[in-house]
Amino acid sequence: MRGLLTTLMAPALACLQLGCFVLDELDAGSAELKRRSGTPDPVKPVAEAQPDSKTVDLSKWWRSARSLTSEDSDASIVRCDLAGSVQFMRDADCQAQGGRPQG
Image 1 (cartoon, rainbow, N blue to C red):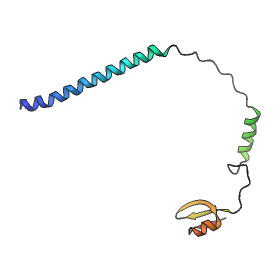
Image 2 (image 1 turned 90 degrees about the vertical axis):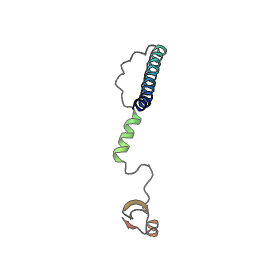
Image 3 (image 1 turned 120 degrees about the vertical axis):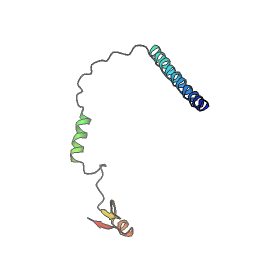
Image 4 (image 1 turned 135 degrees about the horizontal axis):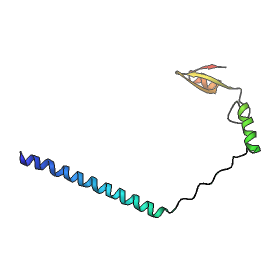
């Protein structure tokens, strides 16, 4: 029984000592980081930004946008119900893949 207890205690103590080593290294690293980091720059207050003309133009465009591009949409692109999912593709491609084109 004593042999089993000794066999179990030795690895347990080794793990505890290893854990202490890791914590010591973390503390030393934290101290080194503080020592080398220097002083932080003071935070400067930021003046309230005024929107420029590009921002105003973009916000107008996004309000009226119907697609992600500025080009006209292609009329041959349709909604395709395909195997329980909805995809957008040309009418002929939808039918070739066994889907049902809509619109």
